[in-house]
Image (cartoon, rainbow, N blue to C red; front, side):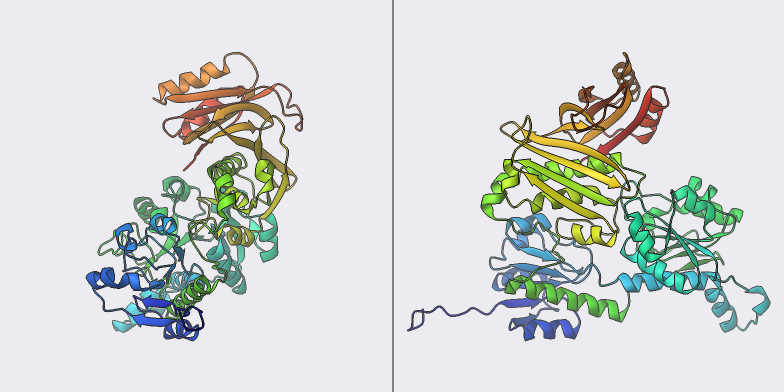
Length: 546
């Protein structure tokens, strides 16, 4: 204590462990922090000294695991100068109350520009022309290319980077067609981009195809032999997103057959890559994952990360945090058990709405939970809706901005009373004038999430990891048919429930019932198709709740 009884103000200390832009370091110092540069520190020195800092800035080389974070007694924020946070144990940081923030928009311009650079290089044979000329040959007549003007560009995945590519392609006079069922029709209209009804629709019309999909179990191998077979003759393909999106052998076969006139690849299934079956092809342009490799993008990452560290240490808004935002303890005690339920309902609602563009997500919170600050629950619903459908990993903090970019509105309503249950959560995914609604609650001493309604039909089933839903004609034998097919495929049913009575707020569908089944393993789309094709079934969907 000072003689006047006031405490000394402690100046936050920030460690910049890896190289970032000087402007980022200057920004930290201008905020009044003591900044140390530890670029040359060993792992042992970092472990010994990390407890002295309130903030740390890293890139991809520094591994902040649970053991190291346990030594960081004063640490309040981790700034990752880049997009991925795979080198940070986010769960361990969250448990210790440490904000983890990244710079998700630092490289989107660089990635979009590199996509256009590869598209132009491919269309105009730039790499071949350069190699030919520097080798002493003048092969002008053999290296004629194609114009982008008035060609159709098909964009698979219409998130941040896909939208920037669309804007640039329109500047070249291209007609832009995009497919992404998780972007609203209004957003397509705002950008003047035509919305493809399906990936097949895009394949049938595109002269150039550019990939901007997230990497998920569903998108891995998206461009396979079947996809290439559905494309126009002479299409050109550009991949600056993720190598795993393309089946290499299928692309090779499509190039050999002439179906694909050329390909440009910045990413590969395994990196770094020394050899590749397409490296010897004249009509294939390759670069070593340079999408984010511009001086401006690297500088931007450092500055944006420094801004987030300053916000975290000065009480500001950390807009790019990747872990759960702060919630009042008294609210978290009540709402915490409902967070998984809300995320599950968002995933299920999205599964039921699959194939439609999403315009709005409506969240109704009924009962005691409505007396609290429920923003966290709406965020959890949005997380479930978007999970697996965006270029970057979705979390409770960035979900609103990702939804806004896609033109998806989120509407939350609350009522402090709920019919039949203490608390209810209703989620409606709206596309145009159509909406699908799912309802759930938590039950029991352990707050197990239960699904209570889909397709307007009521039942009660405890949610497990794998959920399959059918809508079918309400006639005898339908449950048995599902059980038989599941058994034939070695799928074990954990529980099942049937809804025959419509909710009072929903119209009767005239003899249709809903069936919910949980299993101990995923149910493949092929099994769903087999059941639905058997007659009497209107629809079937399956979803894995992670």
